[in-house]
Every structure is written in C-alpha cells, then in structure tokens.
Image 1 (cartoon, one colour):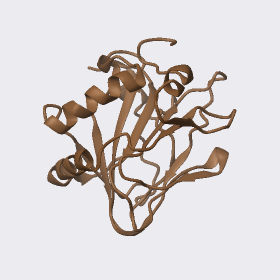
Image 2 (cartoon, rainbow, N blue to C red):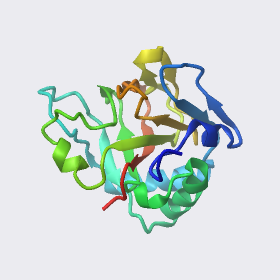
Image 3 (tube, one colour):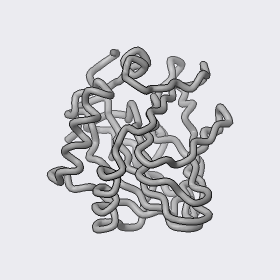
Length: 208
C-alpha cells in the first residue's frame, strides 16, 4: 500500500466475498453481507438518537443539494467498536487514519446530489478540513437497510447504480494516478421508505 492511510485493490480483492466493479476508470468494490441485520439495527438506533441536518464543506448556493440527516456516532458505543474491529482487517488501514464513523438518514424525497468525498483544493474550506489530516483517501459506506423504492447510489462516470441492501458495503478509492477523481456519485432520492447508511472516511495523515 502507498501509505498507512490507504487501502489497495490487491488487499480488498483478497477479502472473502468482495467483488470489484470491472472498470479502468475507478477502484470500486462491493461486499454483500458485511454486517448482520442485528448489527445494522443497533447502528440505526444510534443514528436516530443523534441525527441532525446534514451539511456540505463548500456551500454552492443550492439549499437542496444535501437534504439528509447526519449523526456522529459515539465512538465508545458497542456497535461502533465492533464495526471498527471489522473494518480494520478488511480495509487494511490503521484506525489512526480514520475519521469518526458517521451515520446518515434519508427520508422520502431526501438526497445528496452528485458530489465527491474528497475536498476541492480550490474550495473555501480546503485548508480547514485538510490542514491537519490531509485529503481523504478511501471511502467505505455500508447500507443499514433495504429501501422500498429509490435511494440508490449512482456513480456517473461508469453509469452504475447500487441499490440499498441490509449490510452491504461499498468501498472506493478517492484518488486516481493522474490526480483526477473519478468517484462522482449521487445519493439518489428515496421514493418510499427511509434509508440509513454509515460512512467511514480515511485520510492521508493521522486523524486529530
């Protein structure tokens, strides 16, 4: 691996049950059943207990760009500690390089329009978010429940949409060899039901 804050395609494809999206444009992986239904239920309860309106790093004038709710999950909660124990060997990344786990809740009509997880170098908040821990390297997102309709995650560059399934993990590399990101993705509107996910981001340097 390039550095302790990075995973790799070689490491992830060696993990049981991992499928790689066959595209040269990005490194994107899927693992069904990464979490049990009971573990997902516990994380959902934590999200419901601490949710607040989601924010974006660089406001763009669109008040409806991100309409979900977010929760900073308590790091000492048993369900979060167990999640971190599962992620460390799976990702191969030292936990010191990880941001705290976040949860997101999407009600009917809520979405997160096309965005990337890395911070724009020309954005007004770049220095604020990257001065200590550096840029985001990898994203690992886990769906905590199935959704009755809508709520998929669409990667525009490859024209592929992933549908929510309880316990399914998606992981992707936020970098490209040429320095350009190919991970533009859209948390699409929920049409019926409620969607819950957790997100774990990793950085170039140790967090905090």
